[in-house]
Every structure is written in C-alpha cells, then in structure tokens.
Amino acid sequence: MVKSLSLESVADSIGAQLKLGGAHPGRNVEQSKREIITGIAPLGAAKPGEISHLSSSSYRKFLGNTNATAVILVESDLSICPSVGLVVENPYLAYAVASQLFEYRAAPVQKIHPSAIIGNDAAIHDSAIIGAHVVIEDRVEIGEGTIISPNCSIGQGVKIGERARISSNVVLYGGLVLGNDCEINSGSVIGSPGFGFAPDEHGKFHAIAQLGAVVIGNKVRLGAGVTIDRGALGNTVIEDGVKVDDQVHIGHNCHVGEDTIICGCAGLAGGTVIGKNCVIAGGVGIGGKGPITFCDSVTVTAMSAIRKSIDIPGTYSSGTAQSEHGKWLRNALSFNRLGELTKKILSRPKSKG
Image 1 (spheres, helix red, strand yellow):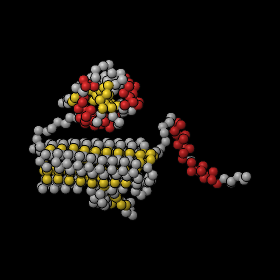
Image 2 (cartoon, one colour; image 1 turned 90 degrees about the horizontal axis):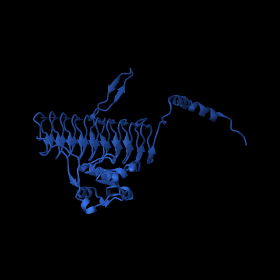
Image 3 (tube, one colour; image 1 turned 90 degrees about the vertical axis):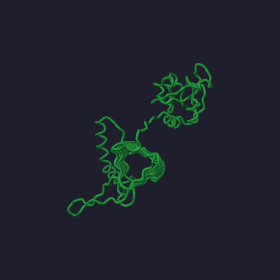
C-alpha cells in the first residue's frame, strides 16, 4: 500500500526548511509545498513524486542530475540542487525519520489467531496481536500494542513491554524481560543456556547450570539470527537503545551499555562488559583471559580481535591489511619470528660512545 504525503507534511515531520535549489527550473516554495510524495529513493534512481537525501559527500556527484521532487541536504549543498531542498543540519538523521513516514505494516485481521496456544495465567493486553501457531507458556506478560508474529515461542514467565515488534520464528526462553518499543527480528534466540562446562580429572566436561536470565531495556533492536545467552549467575543485560545487527552472538553474563551498536557477525565471550555509545563493527571477536571490559565511547573496526580490556575512549583495530597471498605468507613468517628477533636485539652488547 502506497502512502501519500504532501511535501510540506514531510518537511514538518523531519524539521526541515523548504527552499528552492540553486538549479531549480522555476516555480516557488508555496507551490512546491503541495507536491505529493509517495516514497524515498537514492539520488540516482529517484523519480518525480519521491524524495531523496544527500548524507555523504561521495554521493554529491549524483545531486545535479536527480529527478527527485525534493532532496534532504545541508544548506551548503542547496546551490547545486535541481529540485526543492529539505534543508536540515543532519541529513542522515532526517532521512531516518522520513523513512518511517513511508513504512507500511499490514494489520492482521485477528487479535489472537485461533491456532495460538496460550498458557495458564498469561496476561495479554487487549491491544496486543498474537499470530498463527505462537506458543505462549504460563505466566507470560505482554504489554499494550505488542505484535508477536507467527511461529514464535515465548517461555514461562517472560515479560514483554509495550509496542514490541517480534518477527516470526523468534524464541524467547523463560524468565526474559523485554522493555518497551523493542524489535526482535526473525530467527533470533534470546535466553538460551550459556556455554559453560567444568572439566574433571579425566577430561570429561560437566555442564554448569545457567541460572540467570536476559534483561533487555527499552528501544532495543535485535537483528535476524541474533543469539543472546542467559546468565550463569546473575543476568545478561542489554541496556536501553542498543542496536544489534544480524548474526551476532552475546555470551552469558555480558553487559552491553546504553546506545551501543554491534554490527553483523560480531561475537562477545561470556562476561564481556561494553560501555555506553560504543561501536563494535562487523566480524569483531571479543574474548580473552578474564572478562573483557570497555569504557564508554569505544569504536572497534571490522574483523578485529580484542583480547584485553579498553579503558580509554577511541578507535581500536587489530589484524593486518590484505595483500597478495605470497607476500602475505612471507610477512606472516616474519611475524612469527618477531619474538626471536626482538630477543636477539635486546641481547646485543650496547655500543659505547
């Protein structure tokens, strides 16, 4: 279903000023306000009736030829805009808000599908929507406006806040607490047992019972295929505003601070503590001797391996850049000899004078 909004309505919603671009062929702002907008598209592909955005200088080359009815941009880019400018200070943020204006989610016909299984003493708000083949176990609480899509499994005693969006095939183990305005995407498993085993004198492993739960704050977004283990003793905690990409694993008793972003395929070993406003890029692995802790405002670049704690804000990397395979092999051999070479250098007699 296509949504239609006036350009003036879009501008008001994102806090933008409507201004004619320097390359605009004519008309005036008052006429442009009444233009009907039906969607958002990239600068190079946008058609009349759509808006676009310029959030990075690398895309400025597409601005002069765009067919978009209006473009979200900063004032300094207005002079080369051939359409109407939606002038803001932060185009990417404004684009994010605008994208929500055109999102469409079909409302289900039934509040609770007849195939859903509801346990004893479940408290489900009248406005909540429960899809087909959902299993809700005993003592579950589901808040106002929450939507649980088909084939989800909600364990005993789970507490889900208001306006949650839980996509199909999500598993929430018993005891989990989920705050308000959260989103969990398909295939995610939250609250599964942590990976804990104790070896005996014969090398046999004995499972450590995972007695904690997972506690998730408000406005948390979990991507598809995310796995978060419950705590062994105490809880695994995900604070307000955390955003987690697809295929991320968070081990038992981790604590992720407010407004941190964790990108795809990252992995956090059990007990890892991440501060507020951190960015963990794709493929990062965190784990080492003893629990790893990050202070606030740490960024770790893609594919880094973090083996010790970080207590100073900043950007951190590990590993080596790509190179031709033969050269990489030679350099790898040299790297493996660094300890030996360092020892030789340190053992040399110091020169006099």
